[in-house]
Length: 151
View: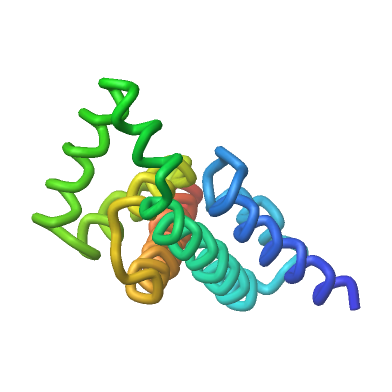
């Protein structure tokens, strides 16, 4: 029962990390002694995928509102950031989301919101975010394992 509660907390943390928490996604790995690693990664990936879908879905709806368009046109920095992000996403697409979110330790909330406003396929972008979370976890696990073998 304690394991299920822990896995549910990992899931909720990943949803929160995608939607609002500016913290790294791999933070739940500190509980690896109490939770099965494979299940933890699975629940983290599911949480990040669902949280990313919420962000992408809301961003897709938000970018078409008049209030958002006025806000972007009013502030020059937002215009510049929006234009740069749009060019970046148009050029690299889902692969850009995947690569940026593969960086361990990088809080991905901001990049998710940037891509959410620009991206047009919430399901595909959220699947890329979930896959990137799996890669991040794998890189951190491999790094910790390698470091422990050397030390």
